[in-house]
Length: 216
Ligand SMILES: [Zn+2]
Image 1 (cartoon, rainbow, N blue to C red):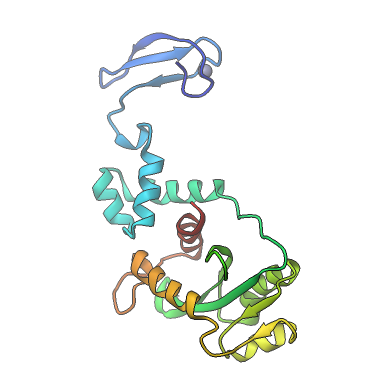
Image 2: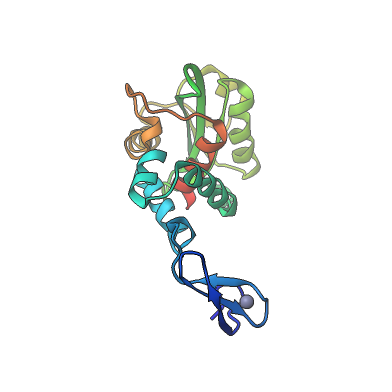
């Protein structure tokens, strides 16, 4: 069976490493059941995804799966592109918070802003960027568009200017769920750990890893 179009395949010689190759009669693409470089084998994408969710770093995934670190980076980016944001329900309560991390070097501070639904603790949207109103606005605008009933945040001053006062709430213990989620994130993703030398080297990869962790 062809892995691309499920057509019928016939034998098509052997590869340099003496593995039997097959060619599809329909789409004319060739494949093999075992490759000498394990990144080409089936199921490696799912393995990369589960390792990212379990908090492995890039090089530890490369060592565990016996593939190169560059391949791991490329796979993470391609997998994250296939992940779509969940559909947001209208008129719900949300908790919104920001957490600080480093990107590229320890002096480059960046924010991860994200919102969770209060009833089922599902992450509805997130943004990564400089510690400015623009980054906060990416998430607050989504919540306003989804006609949020109440948005719970901490007492950061910028939220008062970005959120309508009738929906905004800063009461004590209002952000308990998301504060706990921050701790889980820091435990589950190695790149977010405090007081370690692990941190993201690029914003794109941080975004990709978070998308896989939240929605993958
Ligand atoms: Zn085919």
